[in-house]
Image (cartoon, rainbow, N blue to C red; front, side):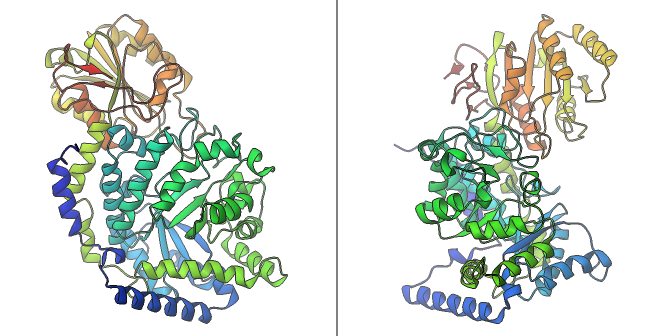
Length: 596
């Protein structure tokens, strides 16, 4: 018998069904209406295609990235961006940063300037806050999986899509369908829903449905699976030593689920699979992986898009426009962020003229692109209502859902001596130490004031990469005066960083705290794998993000304001298996607490 849905979920689902931004797919049609719509779509696609020159058609297969910020529409900066988009007839832009209102204003101006409606895409994997200061504050995918309910992935996808469409963004580069089965992976890590292929597939499928129901294009990435790597593809080319049988058993499972769910696009990865292809070509440039495996064997007929061609894995081996040409020859419909868009466009046109790429091959991709734009409703309306932005972004019921999921994600893996949750008396005699692996003000930004707001005389100290050896000694002296210590290490997953570990000096400080004989609880932010640096920790709590929503949720769990519900979605070799997690009912910290 199925358990009833929580009231909060029912109310939220009801609210979302009446959202301001509606998907074209949500409009019910009679069979005759569907046929008429298909005819209209085909007519628009073919008429638009026929009106484009070869260069304009090739331009539709390229997208460029822009840092969103205030730009006067008559100013030089906007003029340069507009010129790039219009003169090269680009298929779209990828937006980064900005505020909701800035993004909406910019995308409207670009849409008005473009001859063909634009894709506007973004990497909002955990919502708009992935790139800006506003938006419903979701935790990372691994946290969503730790919370245990795929419906949360559906709602996150749907809310994100609705907020995106409100600001003029119509294509989401998510969900991440990678299986994070390598603890040393510096580029995927907590962006993945976990390590169990079938469980990850459930969350991916739910997320795809949510994004589509919210009216945006969904993208499964990074094909054929970027989880078993220890090299960041922003820096260099990663190689996966997996054969085809392993791919079928592990990496391809979520991608098959995404395709079955109707995913609009699949993003190919800059990773080599020599045991599958017999060469060292990255998947994004490989006909065997893009054209044969994804397009023909898996039967995917949606958009195939490369990861950014500006990443180190590509730029170090394929200069100029070569990467874009190779990607299209491999089977890609769109090449993202070539370092020189004009040079890439020139190279594609020249490849057609010399017979290396046929015009029919270009037209095949452009038809897919135009059909997707029609499905988004861009043929009829390409700009958004600026007055609606503040009604859609951060709706209270959406924020409540994000907070609930973040709370349920916090995972208690060890609780030696029943230390957690801290009762009021013990908390008052506890020293809290934030260890920031990066010089990032976000690390501890919410954790510290949340503690201080609850504990009048709380002692909260902070260390970061600038902390000296002498200062660490002073921190240890302060810890010796406390009855209990809660140490909160923060490690930010960032492109080009190449690691998700604490710097050794900081890890050694944590180990010394643990060895002091004091009761020490480690509350780790950024991923569950940090315990490998101090496996002797008797009390270990993990969040799956460093963001504000995770920091606030962890404080509520530490102090017993909410139950501890999270379960580990990955293995931590030699320490914990998938599903590990101590379940505590808030302030109850007794024999009735269960570990499963």
